[in-house]
Length: 252
Image 1 (cartoon, rainbow, N blue to C red):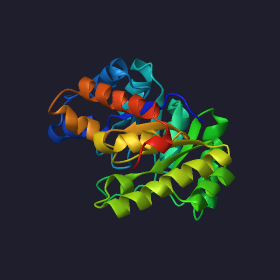
Image 2: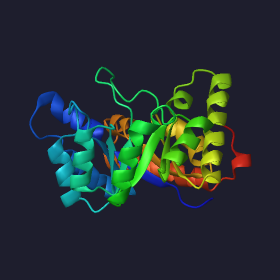
Image 3: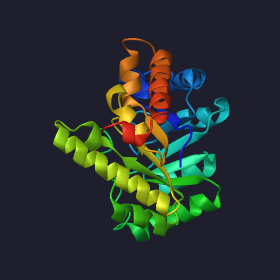
């Protein structure tokens, strides 16, 4: 599987900055508009149980004011299922969520959580929402996602992006490649996200069975020094440049 790889821009941390002072600035919906103009293919937003960044009103406005597909990141709870079924975003990515964590730590246990997750996958699928599961790059988890009937998985690539030495980096990169290949074998669409930066995006984007990258924190942070639009354009450029290179020609 080859071709253009999609970029989903996560606007959570624009909302984090807004919420630090209260009020309405900076507006994450304005960030979504800028992302669309800069070449994003979709917008991702995580509505957390504690509403620490994205709010219910943000989700409603994104559905009303943004033309790009919305990918709603959500925990597998009855509250979030009701919200997803009410707003019917283009996609919903089920992620693990712990109140005490600063950001999403690791992937879902799709294998161990099969009985709990099955209803969420089924009900959102029946509502024509594209369901994805955020999992570790592990063949057991990929197979479990397939058995659940989720059409899409998103690989948690944070361990690769945060690796401190080349040996560790190579180990985690190999896991991503093998998981993406396994997903392709099973007929799953495969995405990746978490911790991707200018430095790590190339080796990830070059993997031919990956169809979409969801990136947020790095883009918002880098925008402090340049601008959000320019940072997204540069990420888009690096993704396209990597996609034009054969995997055998690029090392991790």
